[in-house]
Image (tube, rainbow over all chains, first blue to last red):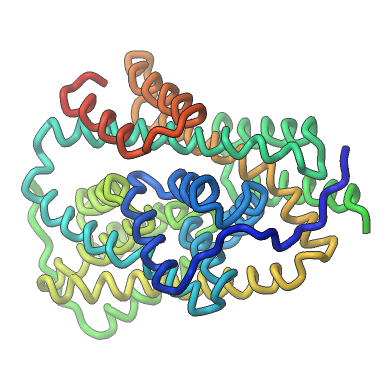
Length: 194
Length: 194
């Protein structure tokens, strides 16, 4: 397969300021029902173009393998990439402040209306849509794998194994990441030119 | 309805709450939700700080609310605090739980990401990111599968699966705003159609 182009600091748009980061991440978080990842990919990669699909997958891989909430890790990394520690804190605060206030309000409201059958149904419907959004994010990112050093065939192979282990066999994520992940990393290491 | 809890909380108890989350932070690989079983064991079974219904509602509300799913931890802290007094102790619970779960993991992730970015030309760093890419993309599809299954696992739940699949196709292939789809899901659920 083709060699991987050396990662360049491509000239794409960037967040303007800490305020821009905070506001952007607040808006992202507020649109993310049932998980924020789908909206982060849609907005930051496809609309704002702060990062390419390839950069997004790389950051997501790190966010996923590190302990802690994935999307929190991801916003920390994106903020930190542009403005260092301050940027990381601004993105993190954007992700958490307003949504936290809303979640607390909802908890108070839920105590009143949680018993209504329509509410339970609506939650069920939104959860089904949220599950679809996550699958679509995966499908959209799949195209970026054609530039992967492993080659498309190996990528599909690892993808199928990972899906079988997690979705069908329900193995714990940590084992799958360690097991499959280390094999994939060693293969990638051997294919990369030193 | 079970009897509401009325707890008497001393400084030692608040510290234990904080310490519990601090200790879980670095174990939460793949997201904070992976440590939920351990939180249940500690908060509900061992300390009797929370009712089972409060634990489940905290997770459900955080899923339905906009923002990262890690907010379920804020709601758990909130409910423990409310059981120990009122709104003010509730806010203290939110504060301690969130700081505990976030400080260790975000520190580690931030330092690792900065190091990785500085050394991004290293063969090992590139191999790590390239190798994990197909696995984390596939993981998104697997997560979607598991979430859809959580809503309904029997054959009569086919409308839920259909809604998830149709959503995935629409989002993959079009640029419709995600909030319209979530609203549609909520309406379908409210009227009992799925």
